[in-house]
Length: 122
Image (cartoon, rainbow, N blue to C red; front, side, top):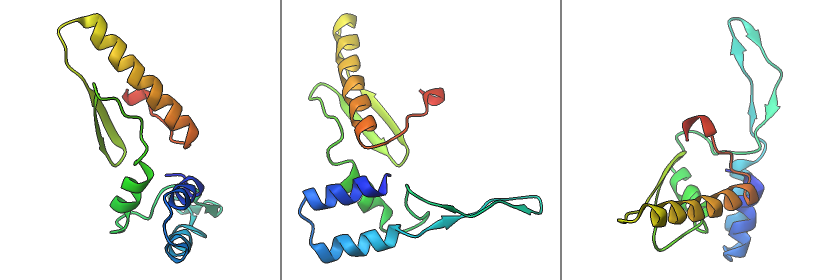
């Protein structure tokens, strides 16, 4: 989850300023460091994602995905970093066209909100 994108959405959804500031502080100034064997990497800044195990994560996830691409012929199944889209029909050309249209919308949304798609798992 792109932190600045989430803050933009909170502002657009007219969340109270004090709540936006609390969430911004919750997500900002987080660091990481990797240890392999006995060697530590340099410290890096975390620009995306939420702290693992936080009870606030599901709510922030739902807020971030509120404007996810929708299509009345396709069911979006979203959970954490997993997603599926489903449709049904008896005409294969209709199914392909419907799914492709939804995939195009998802691609646009992901590019706009800096969400990476793991094509190896697609």
